[in-house]
Length: 85
Image (cartoon, rainbow, N blue to C red):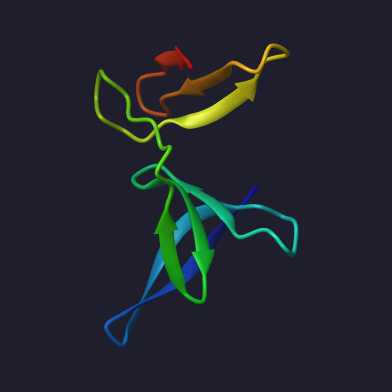
């Protein structure tokens, strides 16, 4: 993922949101510390229903890795707390 400024259309006004976006041309997946994971389609963010929030500080966590047994390790970018799902 690489950091980009995404133009978000909101009621006819365009704002930019800093987010990390997948480098694959067909992928719409993004991550932002405030919103967590979302898909960016036609100038609009679509939030992920599976997003995890940190129980310590309520920040959106990022998926650090998927282990060989299928467990997911999520990490908080603010306090570095981790949770396995």
